[in-house]
Image 1 (cartoon, rainbow over the protein chains, first blue to last red):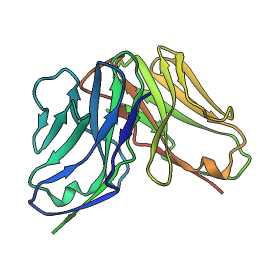
Image 2: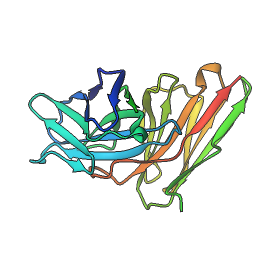
Image 3: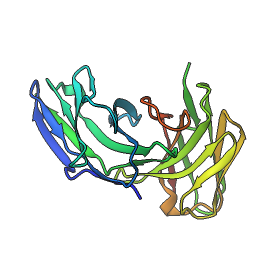
Image 4: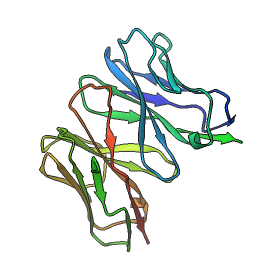
Amino acid sequence: AQKITQTQPGMFVQEKEAVTLDCTYDTSDPSYGLFWYKQPSSGEMIFLIYQGSYDQQNATEGRYSLNFQKARKSANLVISASQLGDSAMYFCAMRAVWNNDMRFGAGTRLTVKP
Amino acid sequence: DTAVSQTPKYLVTQMGNDKSIKCEQNLGHDTMYWYKQDSKKFLKIMFSYNNKELIINETVPNRFSPKSPDKAHLNLHINSLELGDSAVYFCASSLPRQGPSGYTFGSGTRLTVV
């Protein structure tokens, strides 16, 4: 069974600073994908970044990067140069290659302070 | 053109009523899902359909019944609504198996049972 753990219910960061949101996972599947989604107060789910379990390099998408440490089973999201618009819930998720089932962590609420 | 559209966006109804939520995707994806997001923001998969065939049916009350008339539509019918059914319901779609794009979510339906 897959399990995703986000241990930070809430995080604060000063505008323009970087912040790391933690995510650990547990799976027995050898091949899987890791995802991060953003959910602003308006409620929609926005896909941010993806990391495949066999990818050699950490994924990056603009200000978002994923610090993937496979041996530690962690997939932390790093947001650089935080903006006020980054204030939202952030969800880590995992999906095994062999099925279509994506499981989510409990989420972290990020607040960016001016 | 909205990729995954859900209707209605808001639904307020009395206990005991029967209601449906509709979902349509124009992405050509083979797989569609229903997720429930509770008041603590936890996202839990309810159902998954691949090409009109049910492939995941998590432990949800049998008052919930998904229906997929074709692979572009996945509706959720709920009988005898209860207070605990109040939540945000998300429809999503994806390509089968692995992919960096993950899931595409609809904007959600906020169901309030009074």
